[in-house]
Length: 62
Image (cartoon, rainbow, N blue to C red; front, top):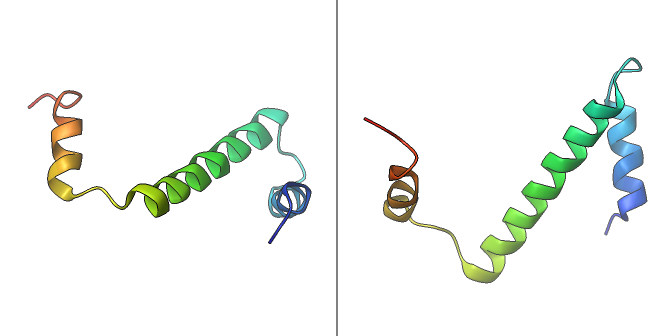
């Protein structure tokens, strides 16, 4: 299992040398969201297409 430090080092190696602190923060934020989503799917199971559509219907105007 990768440690947080190893993951950050790997991220920094993939980002361009001229990236900003905001770029690093954004990528760390996205990695964290993805990790939490995977953990949630593993514990609660996936969300059905119907449930996704129901949840999004209040945000999408037709």
